Amino acid sequence: MNQLRHVRFFKDIHGMVEHMRLHADILRPKFEAVTGILERELGGLGIGTWTNPKGGYFVSFDSLEGCAKQIVAKCKKAGVVMTGAGATYLTERIPRTATSVLRRPIRRFRIW
Figure 1 (spheres, rainbow, N blue to C red):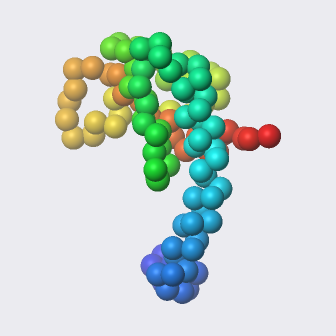
Figure 2: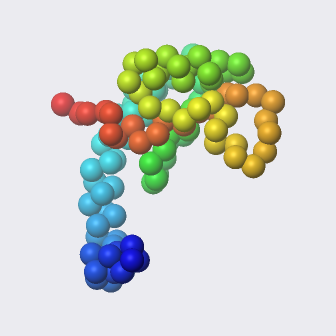
């Protein structure tokens, strides 16, 4: 049923590509703002690294060892949605919990 809805909505591959281009135009400035703030506030401090996505819905952030759970809790309190610390490692057990992912920051982050 959902596949039929997609076919009817997009019509063909060109319709899907155009829709995704429009979607990217909406998301791009929001992701640029998120990564810009990370760079401005944390860049050069050596306390974490993050991805600069060229697509998708996620910015991955790697903190110093042992800090991720506290960072996720503080972000939640501030209204920033993140996955649980270490949640991006679904198939392996890792001894550290340094990786968190900013999930869809576009829903919470507005550009004025």
